[in-house]
Length: 354
Ligand code: SF4
Ligand code: SF4
Image (cartoon, rainbow, N blue to C red; front, side, top):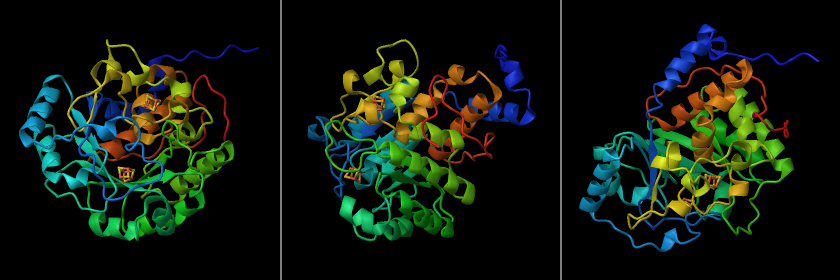
């Protein structure tokens, strides 16, 4: 039997396109994230919302601007360069978002998009879409959601729409993407990841994972100017194994190391401005075995450079993933064309969906 070739890093970046992409993405390795629950309030109630699980929803709400400013200054001092403002609904507290932006200007806000965040909060804005308007009405109790989101954010360079695939909305994605393409909007994909103890009907099955992977790739191929994604992103998000089993989650909740990376620097602040290392990850109270969340993948896969520097296609796939992640999360970063247009198996795992 032939021995597998051993690739040196210089061989992996010998192709000028690959070297250029490597140089482009590694300029962002300085990003160090933490996440912040801005308020306990939301203007809708979604089936499967992980914010309204566990203890964090009961934390006291601190809306004191000076306390937030001090927190952001302390975060900057300990090396945080990227903030994610999230749960419940940050658009309800725009003044606090503005204070965060004044102190740490790189970051992203996760919103349902029903209330426009003022222009002077210059973060990336992720607008959650869970299917067509009929499905949104059923699962999120909100009418005409996509039209209202587009009224607020069409043409806004901050905006990226995030389509969350559940097992029931896979066939609705094309119409949603088409509508967003008509408005020159950008979109990426997320996977419904069940909260701990979830008993609803949105959880994926092996069949729905395979269907989702095919749909993601079709949409990526058919709407290249709209969809921010890669073939490897599709594989990593729809594998039968969740992210932790595939790559080993690096967030403190699953990682005891306090020496390097996310285990050292990441914190997830609750609305009372405290944090708990044992619960800290970007999607707290999500069931790790079912975690395929795009925010989690962005950090967990990106952190596994060495595991992907094993052969040209695996490395290209990883570069596509990181290029996608930066385009989704960093305002102004422009995604390049994907370097690998085929399904590459995550190193150490089996192909499960196709
Ligand atoms: S919009 Fe977001 S925070 Fe509000 S209920 Fe839905 S998932 Fe939860
Ligand atoms: S839910 Fe996801 S991101 Fe959070 S600790 Fe578990 S695997 Fe990691």
